[in-house]
Length: 314
View (spheres, rainbow, N blue to C red):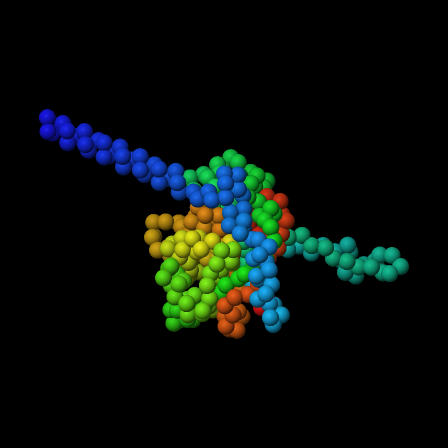
C-alpha cells in the first residue's frame, strides 16, 4: 500500500513538472504591447524621446555609423553583393539632345543582411514562431515578409548611448569570446556616468571592427553581448542594441550548445532590434557617451533586414 502511494506521488510530481515546463514554454514570448503588435520596443520611440535626443546636440558634430558596403565586404555566407552600372552608351558614343547629355544608372544585386545592417523581427524565430508568438505562416513568404517587414518601421530619432567595453576589460580590441554580462554593462555605464533609459539605442564599442578593417572574411568568433546582458537591456526598455561586430553577440556563445541565443532573446522574445557592424571607434575616440541617434530605414517592402547608415549627432 505504501509503495502504491509512492508511485502515485511520483506520477503526480512528474505531471506537475511537465505542466510547469509547458507553462514556461507558453510564457516564453513577451507580449507587453498586445497580441497584434508588430513594432516591439519601437513603441517607445515617442515625441518625448525625440525632443530629449535633440537637446543632446550641442556641437553639431555628425558621426556616420554605417560602413561602406561593396563586393569585398565580408559577409555571413551565402550572402554577397554585386553592383552593375548601366550606361546609355559605351561612354564614347553619341550624346543625347542639344545639351549632349550622358548618364549612368545602376542595379544592385545584394543580400540585405550585409555590411552595417538592422535585423528585423522576421529574421529569427523559435519553433517556427516569431515575435509576439506569431506563426511562420503569417510571417514568411518567398517574395517578401507578410509581417515584420522592415519597411514598416518608424523613423528612429532617440537618445543613443555608447558603452566603451575596452575600458572595462582593459584590452583594445577585446579578444574573441568576451561576453558583456549584466554586471559588465552596469560597470561600464557607471564608469561613464551615463544611465540607460526606456527608448534608448545602446551601442557597444569593442575595437574589433577597427582592428579587422582589412579582413576579407568574417572572423568565426568575436566579443559581444551575453545572455544576461541581453535580458538586462530588455528590462531597461531599449529599442535597439548594436555593436562594432558582425553578429552583436559573443561568439562562441556562452553556452556552446545554443545557436545565436542573444538574437532570439532580443528579436523574438522581447521585440528589440539588432544593429550590426556599427562604426563606433570615432565616437569612442571622442569619449562620447550619449548622443542623438537618427535612422530612417529603407522602405523595401517585406524586407527581413536593412542595409543602414545611422547617424550619431552631438
